[in-house]
Image 1 (cartoon, rainbow, N blue to C red):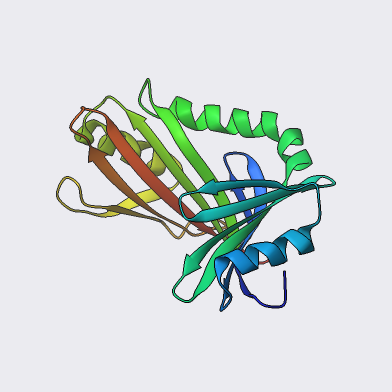
Image 2 (cartoon, rainbow, N blue to C red; image 1 turned 90 degrees about the vertical axis):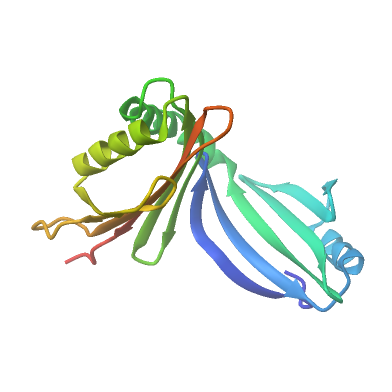
Amino acid sequence: MPSEVRAFDIAQSITLNAMPMRLQGFVSSMPADKLVELFRRSMGSPLVESRLGAQRILGRMQGEFYVSVQIEPAGHGSRGTTAVTHLKAALDGREAALREREEWTSRLLPGSRVLSETNSRDGAKLSRHLVFVNGYGESSNREQLKKLLQQDGLALQWEGRPGDALFFKSGAMQGAEPKEAIATIHQGDDGRTTVVLNVVTQLKAPQ
């Protein structure tokens, strides 16, 4: 990081679609164009550069890792994120990640398709964020979700009207790690239903 930026952690360890990475955010009083020049010098070459709207994106391979930086204007200064992706670990763990995704997909309604899957750890909290779509209605997805989460020890605590969030929580089972989950289900005008599920596990400290 150049000294002209103030960095903060977003995720020390996160796996996005089977890609393990570390994410940091940063802010700077410097204009985006000047900050891009600083990152160019600090990252070295060869460097891959691209644009996405107002964002400038820099990327470079460093051994087993791929380092990318996204920078965009913010007020009189700039802001952005850095991602360090462990490509070798992603390749080594690809088969296991695919098996885990297939296992999850097999528990969903037939024809469901996982759009994204994110696993992250923040201290003793382990989070799993899953987005999937299918052609079934909201009520069918709601019942299937309650069934599969019950199999994982999570009981429904609250559900509102269609379109509201569903909250789940694990019981006080002996030796089990406490879990909580929240899900939203939305059926679009095209008849396809999108489900967003986030499960948080509180890991126990080793004895």
